[in-house]
Length: 524
Image 1 (tube, rainbow, N blue to C red):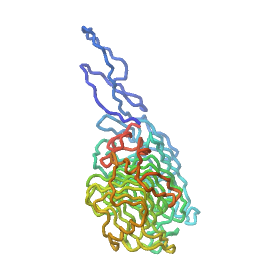
Image 2: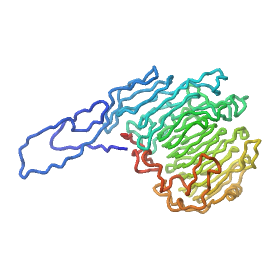
Image 3: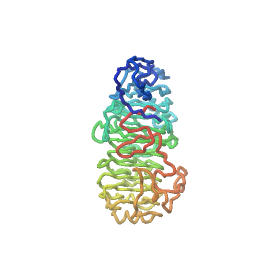
Image 4: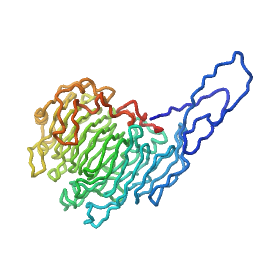
């Protein structure tokens, strides 16, 4: 991975800069040899070659894709550093499986609500009267896609995405302002985000008379100008895969309570693959999972302005290796689980399990973790750190969230905490219907928990001696085969720094050996 620094070298002579070909990176002063005879000084100086600076130059045109609508060549876009890219706008709907190739000096633009395929409805067997279009959008490693305003990418039901970057070449979704160099540490909310719409069961149905968890229960994607739905009857549904992906500066607000976040899943099924995903400065939640089944690992949420991890409407979620860090004075809770909306006993009931996490709270607020709405929740092998000294670690709301297990209600019992270390001035606070003392008793009933912990997190994210040497460690494989067996708490062990290479550095957390600052566009 190379991030170029840019400078202009001035001498006593002026040299013309030669342009490179359309698919190359231009270097000042590489267009040929220029000889200027000014006589021979005495003594002759020894020339030391000065490295020239490389600039990104635009590709010659847009590639051909399988979709008949093709890509629209919109000319070029540049930043103040002198980089320039060819801009290729995608169609508003991909009607055929297509690949967006990585080409030097080329960016892709989302011109609005861009749908992958046409919604195939809540059932895969066409009993809903709709046929799947089976469109797959493939995005190659190193591709950069940008958007502005209310534009976002939506993978509709019965279709999929294959956006798998690498540790050396992540895929970057970002904003126009980021491309042209206008962003700063607190930029956010400049475009929509990425939405995966699947047909796994959900609750809180759009139609009031629909039965939760059935094929009739659907919800509408927030922020969609063209109505788009998710939910259905297939727990194993696949919306494709995302890995080694950065999603920057998302969360455009259309109206009150109608906005997207970096990554939104709605009714995705267990066939969907999600890992190595970084959310940067979402103006809403970092990620939000509505219903369905979500298995995700190696997740970074940096600088979200609402909740870092929001889970709702009956989702069954497993998450491992999760780092969530706020910006100073910005953000709400790290975790918000479900809503108190009168629908607490709809099934499937939310059951979210998070293992190996590091939560860093930097805004004085109501709580770091809020579990409510009758949600089932498990936290294990993690660190909760309040840097403000004013935010309680844990709050639990409503009697439904703490009652005994009941299979008939799809309820596994009170929240579970195992090998969780709290580094907060106040560990617990009163919730609605659940006192701080009751929450503390639930915490104490777990194994290996520590309420008087002192963290040794280094560089704002990396485990120190206390995290890598913590005992006892909870074996999360007892919860699900999705989880790995580990020997430490926290998200990132010093012996296995999985953040390196594919991430970017922000005001919330910096990783070092990566694509550079999130405010800049790397030359991948």
